[in-house]
Amino acid sequence: MENRRVKLTKKMMKEALLELLEKKPLEKITVTEICESADVNRSTFYSYYEEIGDVLQEIEADLLEALPQFPGTTAWESEAGFLSALEDFFEYVKEHERLFRVLIVLRESSSFNERLISCAMDKYKLSESTSMQKLGRYAYIYCINGVMGVLKEWLNSNFDMGTKEFAAIVLQMSAKAIA
Image 1 (tube, one colour):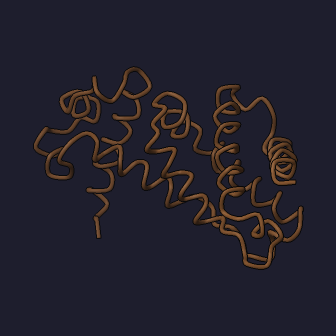
Image 2: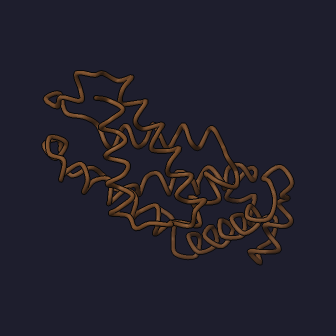
Image 3: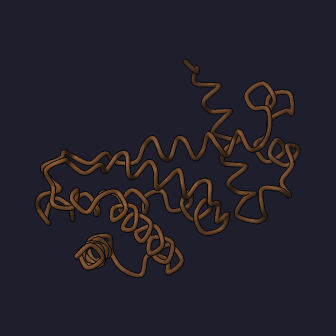
């Protein structure tokens, strides 16, 4: 269990890395830059992380771990339940705009996108009784990947519509895709 000081120090280093990622690619960022921005020593950095990629991995893991969980398997069986789950997910994205913008838009990291898709599929599992389940895993993967594509565009457009409207559009597109 990390104490408050450790959590604060790591938070400062994560914030420093995010700031730098907004300006340049990960490969061009140095430990020295992170330390200067976070106002910590290099030895402090290395006491928590082996390399810069470890900081990024922790940022991604924190974000994915906190993704909203789907409220239950029966909610999939109603359009309103599905819409509500989508709204919660997109509201989470909006609340963590900076992180998603850096990780999805600026970095265009296929590894993060794959982890996000895998996490979404895990947290938003279909129940055995839903009609969507009959279409199988491929249809579900198709829909999830499509959602990630339009999510990126929604981020690029600076959320040109509200979460409720965006969720309704995603639901409509998903329904057409599996019909």
